[in-house]
Amino acid sequence: MLAIEHIFIFILCLVVFTIILTFLFPKSSTHKLEKQKPRAHCPLCNHILEKGKKVHSSQTEIGDTLIETRIKGCVYCVVENNKLKRTCPICKKDVPKEQMILATANPKMSRLQLSIKGCRLCYPQGFTDDDR
Image (cartoon, rainbow, N blue to C red; front, side, top):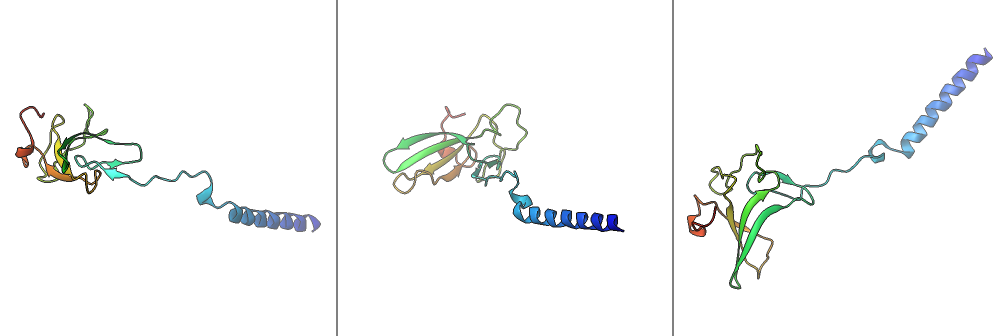
């Protein structure tokens, strides 16, 4: 009879110890890496860009009131063997890998806030024959 009481007390102590450990070290804080919030989306393929991932582009200043930005795409849709569909955010037509879209910004307001004008099909006045 004495052995059964000892086993019961031992099991009771284990249960209490487990409950105490559960409160001291909750599951959510034990070595769980927090997912980073998406920084932005690629305007061509709409892929989520996390911290450190950038969109390939080139900027040209036109006077004091306009900056033209030619957006080539992100690291996911510019590569040779990509399977992501690249579409123009304005006309929703396919944009080949070698083409880009045009966006403008007002440097007096904000250099980072771009106004997307479109691709070669929907905004042809922004492109020349040299643009590919």
